[in-house]
Length: 260
Image 1: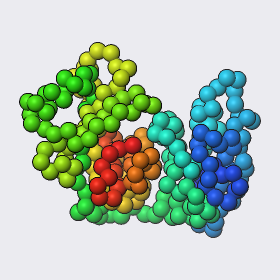
Image 2: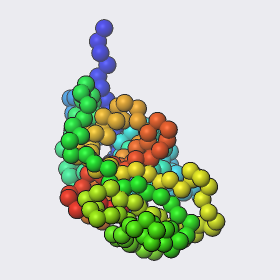
Image 3: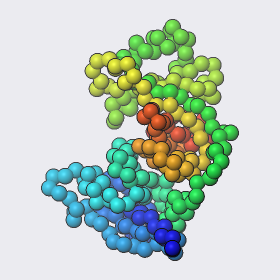
Image 4: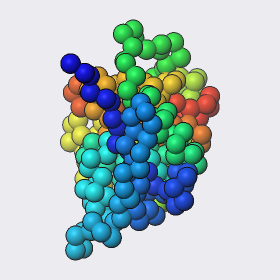
């Protein structure tokens, strides 16, 4: 009996049909390709205007109209829409921004259809980066970790657009050792319940796209597929362990530690 020919449907945001050059939030249509070992075929172009329903949010329209496309390639996408699409089984990526569509499709097809290796990944360069905790009172938490436990503030950021504060704490080794990330959401009212404050673990990895393809093939939930960081040249992804705890995977040059 003949084996079925592997086929992967990929949506692309492109202005000219040659390169991946359009941001997710700006795209008004998407080109749909079917990719097989023999090559790639343009199936159709789907426009938001033709699929919208009344006052439907454009993101919801895109999620629905691309439901048959497990991969979406864009020039830029934020973490919120990426996670929304991942929940619908659509892995949106901006890692191929600016590339020729034909080259990107060929590489993704090869990566997605390759047989998973039987040996464990090479983790010789992996290391734990930080643990993220949400806190209800940032100054109170800093007094505890700095004044009582002797930690040092390594970095502090105020994110006005997304309305939260972010502080990294550590000991003598700085970012060369595992650190603690505290996040205070400005709109939060009241304390967090036990267990509600845990955010994620972060692990420095290498070869993140190959690792994530391998994890996806093993059925590991991936609420945020690999994407470029807004600040820095690294790539980040979020997966979940068997108990639903989030793990941030960070593939970044030495010295770049912070998540997007």
